[in-house]
Length: 177
Image 1 (cartoon, helix red, strand yellow):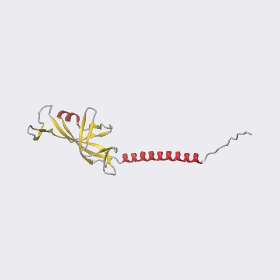
Image 2 (tube, helix red, strand yellow; image 1 turned 90 degrees about the horizontal axis):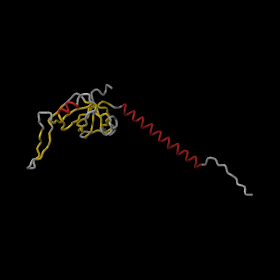
Image 3 (tube, one colour; image 1 turned 135 degrees about the vertical axis):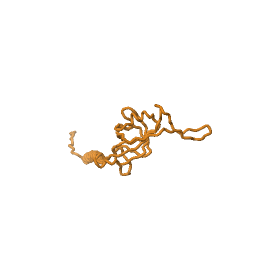
Image 4 (tube, one colour; image 1 turned 90 degrees about the vertical axis):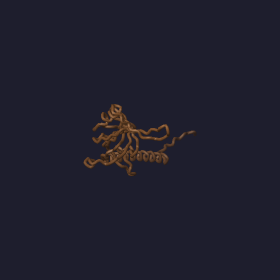
């Protein structure tokens, strides 16, 4: 009389609930991925040409003339994205530094040495791709936040600089592309 009967079980309510939850989680993850890809493509489509003005302080005059030439492409150090292509306009002034005298007075001294060691502050601009987000913040390449008075480390094939962003404006040819 000790017969064991095996019960055949079908899919229970708990099994159905687990399957529904797994499908919902996978569907939600897929939907988020699709939306993020679509948003990234939308931002790329809205990128325009902008002119970013910057200042490089206290560099050798020969370095400015040799490496900040028109057409040179610079990249951000932090993520290696394109910072921009150097424009033709160029402005420089003797580099200046503040010194404290023995009596405690602070004076501004300009470097006016007339040889290869002449130091200059250079004002340049680059043409870059970017857009403004919904909070009216400029995003370089649609990704990297860039603002006025922000110091940014950039590099080209030959040199690295730390620059101070002094202006961001829409380029005249941004509507053409």
